[in-house]
Amino acid sequence: MRFTLGIVLSLMSINAAFAQGPMVKTINGTVTEVAEKGRSRTLHVTDDEGNMHEFMLTPKVQVEVRAPADDGFLRPGLFMSSSGVVTNNMLFISKVSVYQFPKGKRPPAGKVAKARAQAGASTNSYDITGEIASLEDVPDYPDYKGLIVKATPRVPVMLEKNHSVTFVNLDPAALAAEQPIELEVTELRGGKLNLVKAVVELPNAIKAEDVFGTATE
Image (cartoon, rainbow, N blue to C red; front, side):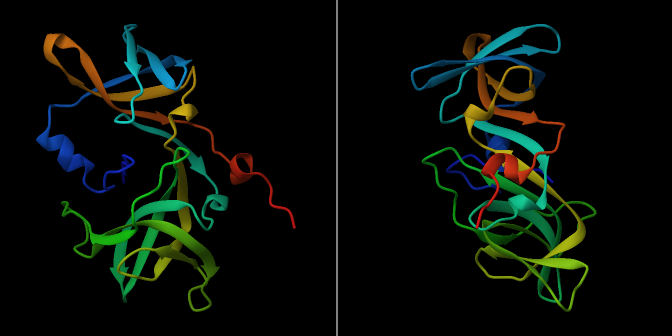
């Protein structure tokens, strides 16, 4: 499952947009520096072949800093995305991505939509995005949690027992030196590279209390 989230673009249309645009090339490397000057940021990357790259982090650049996370991120007010299968009018999911937006940016409206057809996938597969309202016990389904999501149309979401949560920080400020990074670029005239997307996959799990603090009564 791979969700992309350009701030004002649909989570489920970005791949199609890429397909219609210039060919995307992938570069793997390590963040050397994130230089700040006023409100601007410049990303410096050394790729796996030792080449240096420098890109301005404009609002058009899609940034994702991803890390394994705990259930503390399944809290009201955070934006989520997932895919699952509808059975008995309920959507069963096992992987959830939870997003933190840059300050001043708002997530898109939540929705449930038929997943794009893929070989081997169920014909009842659906994608869901939206703000989390609550995470609840479900008496009739002790091996599941009920995840209430503000999405249209409304559908009961059942979170499987052995699920996984990924925290995705969309703020370029989360980029830092030494992080492994994957860049998606397109080639402009003259061979200059245009940065479309930057993804960091952090290996260590992150706890919700480290991001949001410990709640007090």
